[in-house]
Image 1 (cartoon, rainbow, N blue to C red):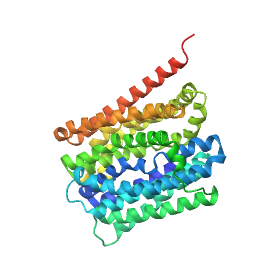
Image 2: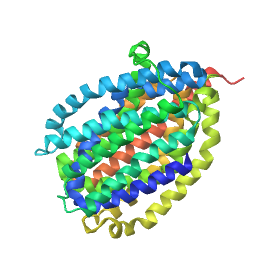
Image 3: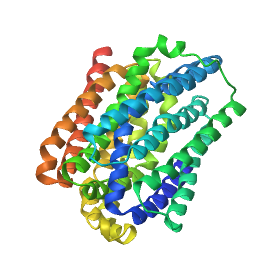
Image 4: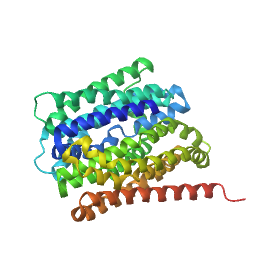
Length: 402
């Protein structure tokens, strides 16, 4: 997972540099605003079916065909309805004047094809075949790098709409390859919504958790584009992308450990928490180190992305502590999920998402991208304190002293 995620992060950084240089901060900011809105709805397209697939398959491999077919059927059905909903909502929350075709292409890419890629990776993750999971996650980045190279090199308009068309084609090709790989290596299953409907509450909790995560990660980009400018959204999104890339090693550990959280969680929260605490010293130490590296290297970013992104250096320095904060709250969250407290995790994340939205609404008109930074840091710190407090309380309640 570390190797696959590292390659993926490197490839993503390369195509991001090409896109940033080709589009400029304004066009890139428009594209990011659309993808951020779609990201909030995206988890509901699969309705947590990939997480249910992992949960059941890791405990009994015979259940795979049932939950794989259900995951595909759920994604195909729900994504189309969500596409219409996102396009309707976009008219009210995104900057006016964005082409309808841009919204449609990004929505179909991320709500349908990207979700099929995700559940395909989760299918192999359920069998601990993480080489396949890593390959499925790497392949779309490689195809998008080729697409970004075409946009950069060919004499075509360098607009968000042009990139969205290439983005759509590359994501669709990747999804077809991912589903074909699952069918070849693991098999198929009946395309039925029934298994997910029977566990709709838990699946909805998984989806709500991921959606809330997208809100406090991405809503600032939407609001910056709407309340400040597309340029501010582009600059802020560029710095956030660097933070996300720096988080790659920790994300690799989380992917590799996810199925084991369910196994350890069968004995209760104490088991999944002990597993989280085994991993935290290594991931936490890395996070501290990389935060310092980001702060030191930030002034070099405008040389990489171009003069349009000059303010990215200051944004990155402010955002650098996010790597550590994300590491701390993700392990607490996965400990709760593995022990069956997904509802509790989702409730906390929804609450923090609401707080984040209110902070952005208050701070962005006054302070621009700096307000978005403060809202992000405050939200992630609140997640750390709340999730670990709940873990400590529930563990102590289940196992009183003495």
